[in-house]
Length: 439
Ligand code: SF4
Image (cartoon, rainbow, N blue to C red; front, side):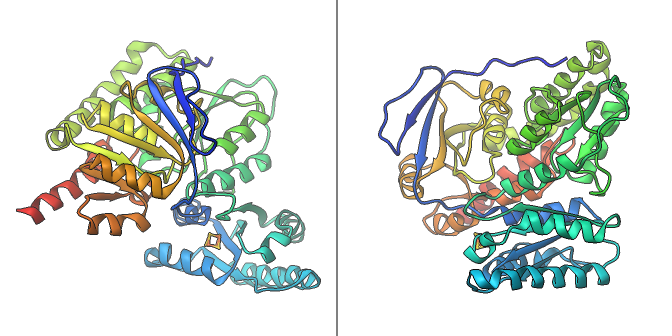
């Protein structure tokens, strides 16, 4: 049984249209459109290829895409890589048939050389030559050709359509329609945890859920992309990442029901997340309390060690990963930091309802970005710590600001109780470094 959480009222103001505030309430929301400074969805390949060990990501793109993928992920390759770029050079419409033939040739070569690949993702990008190619048709054609040993799927990681973490959303949304239906219609409800999690976090969550009495737990994505969960009306899914709008919609279309919950970050977010699951599966509160008490206390103790250095420090978020709202909730509620502005590329009010409700009254939220205006506001606010993308971090550091790269928060295991201290450390470390430099 799912519970709904009351959304905090927001004041919305559209900066692009100059519209006045809409609604009223505890949080103020500014909607901003203009120049952006954020990675494209190709970046998601960096963590998705590590999670799904039998999958391969073939970016259909330009040399720019190849450079991005290599520089973002190249240093992390220890074995044969599980991603590559098929370069599609400039060609006119008449050359599109050749491009399809070339793609078929590259895929055939790849699958012959790498027979361990079970799922191949064709990942679209920005160049107009790629947009002209119908990648979903190409994926269907190639899937048919290599059936049943390889499943070929497609999604877009283009910077025109996606920012940073939306690549994961598009990838998981592409997987959902291919998942099997349950064998019978009246099966017991079962839990699906949605969002790529580090294996260590997945193991911890599975163990705690088992101790609470939940054995039928599936993860999307699984460690092997081929192991797709059964999806249907019996599925109760809980998001572990806040940026999975399309994936949630695809799951809803399969009849699955979302469990409203805060994101599992820090001691309180993680507790709220487990409690929401427990309510859905009617697990006795005493049992939940007994299972969660010890890890929750460990997380609280780990956070307390950082609270001293972070309390009262002012933090400013530029929009980047869509993790900004749950991170801001953690920093304010559990570490005593002061939120000067919380920018996010896209604000899903329903999925983030619990985290929004726990933000301090008066918090300024900004959805979208006009990077110049936001830089002006950041300078005027003079925060102690700025959370931003790589492109902004260096210039801001040069101006004397202390920054935290948002991308590190996506690459690192930060979810759950045992990671709470490490997550706080990610914010405390740059402040400590700045202090040392100033001494
Ligand atoms: Fe490729 Fe477009 Fe991303 Fe640039 S923004 S790397 S062209 S997908």
